[in-house]
Length: 383
Image 1 (cartoon, helix red, strand yellow):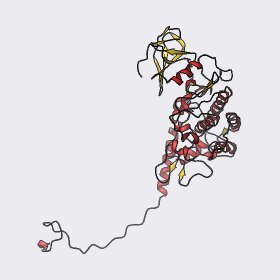
Image 2 (cartoon, rainbow, N blue to C red):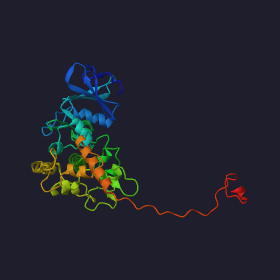
Image 3 (cartoon, rainbow, N blue to C red):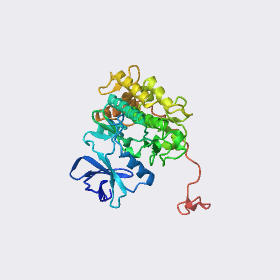
């Protein structure tokens, strides 16, 4: 983390930075000395003119009532010694309560960061995330650069969207694009433009990125990550551009999910249909955030405890995703599962039938190598 520049507010009053909180790909988060309840987002490099103008417009107006609850809106702009835009002043969320939603997307990080989180918790977070997107769109904005770093979640399942200066915003009658976009959450039509630009963001683009995030929340894996039977598997951007949704009804031959992943079949048919619609090629109107919020609310009401294992949840009549992953996966999820898995593997080994003995071939009649010539010797040297 580089040393922060000398910061000042719009009136030229110095803002002493404090200790570092986090580092992003184009900005750092710092505390503000004696100031409590606020944090400074300091850019690593001066933003281009269009981005600087967007930030200036962003801090002029208060947040729209539709996004005030779930979107962290900047309080003011921060400047360097030469009056060049250097960052933003933001309200500070309690770090002991809010963490990045990325920690919920994988089983190992979920156990560390949210040890009490279960499948119903992930479903509730998904519903809150969909409602946050719905409120953002109702205010006339789009996220554009959809990625887990733009969402925080609390221990109680509350969601806050952050990084508003990276969004595609409609301010003062003008549309401002985001500076970048993440390839693993870009729809196929934007993959062709490239993942380095935030241009082209709209409701359909956000709907795709939201569906990818929800898929990761519900099943713990990316919808386009799979095992390729032949050849190297493409990266996320290439798989999305090629329409290689691994759980598609007509998935490509030789492509499947990795062993131990949660099965798509654990989701109710209505939720499966929404994901198929979101990732369909050619592109069709994707499910809206409001549609997702309603579907996930219904899913949360359906979930019941697994009859086989405490702590597991399932939809009645459908497989328990945790049990299915433990049966088929190469890696156990807890110390108790290690013993059971080792015993199962040992039982499998004992059931293997021993192969028949190898046939005994007659000794070769060819002449042995001569110890002096190191090869077949015409004179035999007495051999």
